[in-house]
Image 1 (cartoon, rainbow, N blue to C red):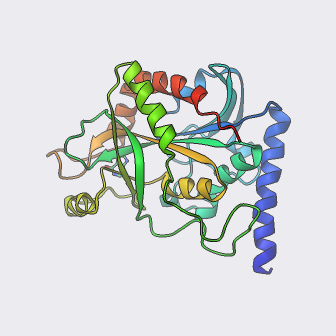
Image 2 (cartoon, rainbow, N blue to C red):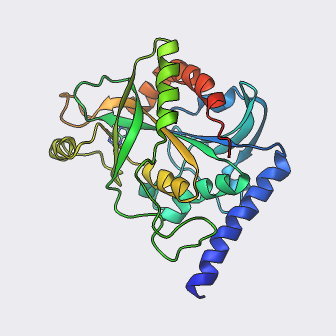
Image 3 (cartoon, rainbow, N blue to C red):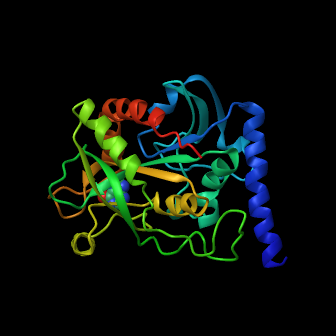
Length: 283
Ligand code: HPA
């Protein structure tokens, strides 16, 4: 198979997956959200919702991580249609970058123009507290590869897409303003992605702090790169589920990550309910 026909297949597979989704939910959807570990509850409160299991969407892999339901829920919040991914695919699960980012390709094919990426992250910035929410201002791609590697399909976007403003500044301002309205203090900072699945060592966290990271996680960055490749506007929000290795004495465990996600669920969904209707992009 030539490189080119492989690329054709990716583009057409995304279009095909979008057609299948549309067969279940025919309304226009311009906004989507990816809900990270322990943060899936937002999707459960969408109105007039339709839920598709990832296994029912061609090309979607299966989510294997505890705390991720593995469903795409389409419905309304604040009068706006939204596609919400309950759970995502991570590089550490063994998926290729193409598999990790295929849902974002599909959402783009569906007509989504604004994408909210949420995640659970460790706090690298020592001024952060466990349970804080952080608006992502920029990222460090340390995950070990780039999802755009390989032949480029111009139908998706340019060979060398600009990454000067991955996380749209006006979206950051909208999130900050909505946070202020509900007296929710939102931090802002740089998210660094490492491949995982082991958590970092204290030495790695000191290194990341020197590099300018405020939060650390194992997702989001490949999705954000692919979204920008397709010209989607991105808002990123991290839930600081734990302080990163070495910041506190205690070891880090996944149960704590899920538990903190659940503890902040209410304020997080409250914020999302306010922010999402304001993100519509006038194309
Ligand atoms: N490190 C990496 N990823 C994470 C962490 C962490 O401390 N917490 C939640 N996701």
